[in-house]
Length: 323
Ligand SMILES: NC(=O)c1ccc[n+]([C@@H]2O[C@H](COP(=O)([O-])OP(=O)(O)OC[C@H]3O[C@@H](n4cnc5c(N)ncnc54)[C@H](OP(=O)(O)O)[C@@H]3O)[C@@H](O)[C@H]2O)c1
Image (cartoon, rainbow, N blue to C red; front, side):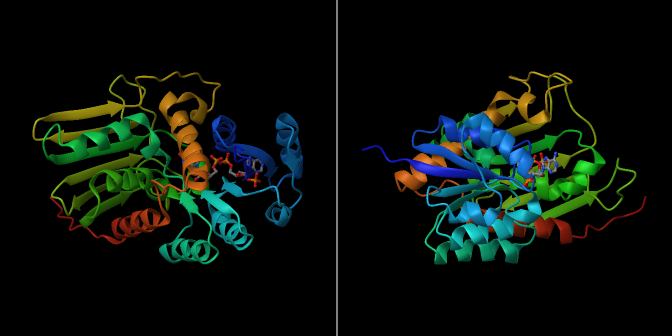
């Protein structure tokens, strides 16, 4: 008999829409219920899919029909919701950043391990077809040794949203760091620079982050994330990766499949592969990791390594020479 994995979604903001589509598109997953701090919104979404609307997160965790929870709530809710789900025996797919500090991410990983549940961070960019293909090229050595990699994510976000998401380093550079870790493994040292170049009201929010990551395999990684403006040019840096090998360069950016309209939300309109990254990670979590017992492609250990690098970037003081 085909196994069914009952999945509930917590946090019904913009990104939850892609997770719900991911569950519906997976082989074994079944959406069984939704939770939001707004019961009204939960009821509205629950009605749309014919599932339960929980009136509390505790009720979600007590539901025997729930095998796994996708935590797509605000950054601050990830830690307590993951701990409660793990203690209730539910597997967890938790949005990034999993928490706001390294010790908190370690606590989440430890609690999930102790309760024998899988906890996967949403490292969705490594589930895009391009990153998968790039990993394959690196592993096969078709283009020789990788030497230098550049990765950027650049788009406008309002100051209010930037505050909610805790700055471009933890929000956007996070994706770049785990993607480069996936491609090149361990980092030897890090140099970083954070600045506020465009926001006027919230001067304490970083809207530009630049870092160099020297990998143990010799690759020099260079990352850039920024929230200053949208880049809708054909050579867009909205999401761009370039890897220089001994025998050639691999490059892609997010404009190839871009459809843009003023009314569509950023998540729905930016690029088809962004959406696909969610469909792929949710299917992998349910069908491969929970049902087929394959190890996750993105682990909490990866999240901890990513976070350590972000903290190093933050604490790194560059020597500024005034000219
Ligand atoms: N992996 C990625 O590429 C990616 C991309 C974007 C965001 N994220 C992460 O996903 C998480 C959720 O982000 P999001 O983009 O979905 O944020 P969002 O739309 O701003 O929603 C954030 C949270 O605020 C609450 N909320 C949403 N609409 C609301 C409203 N009208 N009134 C009151 N509360 C409302 C929801 O929680 P409740 O329903 O519980 O109230 C929701 O989970 C964040 O941790 C973010 O960092 C990841």
